[in-house]
Image 1 (cartoon, rainbow, N blue to C red):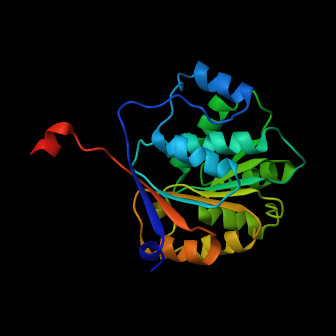
Image 2: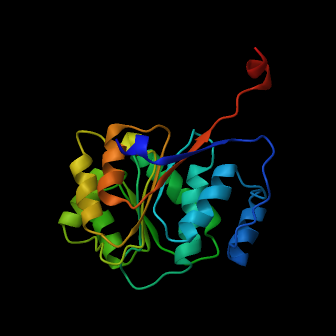
Length: 231
């Protein structure tokens, strides 16, 4: 099994977070500060530079550790501004609520950019989403099912995708839809793959072994309470 033979880096989340010191764009840093994000979690400290380097990334981390911010900041840093009509980042999420939440985060942290961020899920008619994406998009956030539907309608060009991210992979890559994930990934062989999950499972291992070039799994663990540790 992939997970057992890879080097696993385990890091405990600390209560005291270090200042963001990644080499991010000045405008992005200013927006982060304006939104109160003056300190980064250890996950962000470790993962943002790795994603910025273009390396594939597989990270297991608990809820609240900064996975969403890491994805959004990394995409903003990588894409910077709108370009042509075809998306350069595809983010797969488990449902429309998650897609809308992440779209709102792009709007909040990417207010200084002209990046076009669209959703592909069942929050609106597929014809409307297809037209918006086809007319020009930089980032598309959606479910595996809807992304495949729009791709089948020739409205989603994956030829220039730079980042293919999967959020909460244990909720996205399932036995009933992993072929949809495979189809998307096979259509963008040159894209950097970034996968976040709260726990590892066989389907995530399979995806990593087939589609990712990873030599390590980054695992972030919640720090136990001192009272619990003492018992």
